[in-house]
Image (cartoon, rainbow, N blue to C red; front, side, top):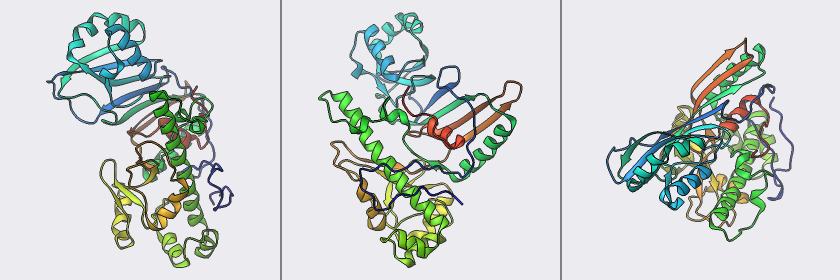
Length: 376
């Protein structure tokens, strides 16, 4: 039986809820360090570039630099503001990463002239093309990851292979990773500073924190439903009538659908509310991995859950001066490949995750333990 971390279901909002894992296996030990040698990230664009237009698309490889550090260096050598650059997502600093950036074509000659300077700083220009518009944040399908796991015994490697099969089938909880919350893990506690970029990051960190808390609350509910009787469910959660507890218990998937949940087509699509009359159809689509429940990133102009799902979402609706959004509760890893090298006691793990999902969270799901406590 899945161990339920005990806390009062009606606890105060300020209390931090525990982290839950999707699979129910014993922790697996291995060594992994986020570094260019053992952690490779390759971005997959959302669309094919047109090969013509006023914007230069640059495919870059960077080593041991954050995306912001790379853009800062580019702005220095090209003599322009960082705002001229477009990018689809931020990539890890402690890794070897490949991504696409855009800039006006007027900087093409200067970029070529400074290619060696950039290379000496860990940034290599792989190739260039053109496109009709600037790359916007979020304009990517996702990322391909390649990780090297060390100090891996044959038994642990066998367990990893088994767990990967489970996580591909059932998905994993889409928590924000520790790097979202800074080195001390408390960025969400800080007020705004008056600095636009920093304030945007702090507000995003607050949204991420409340999403993680909502996800833990729903994961705890799922675990309770999966392991206890309808009578016990209704007793623990007074908002759920006995008949509704029976219906939730009958749902075959681990992550239970609540009436009023905001669902989204996976991996891309529109948001819509789940109604009890559509339960059969939505459950079929969930099992086909074409539909996923979403959680709230609090803010303004965002679709909120209703009914029972709305009641569970209510404690995590905060007044945050930023545009709100929704985020998948579950992620399904794809293109998964795991190769064990017994002589080196290492494993090579490759996989693809859609945008917004964290490779570190997936790795922690595999290990069934938290590996990254801060952004170091």
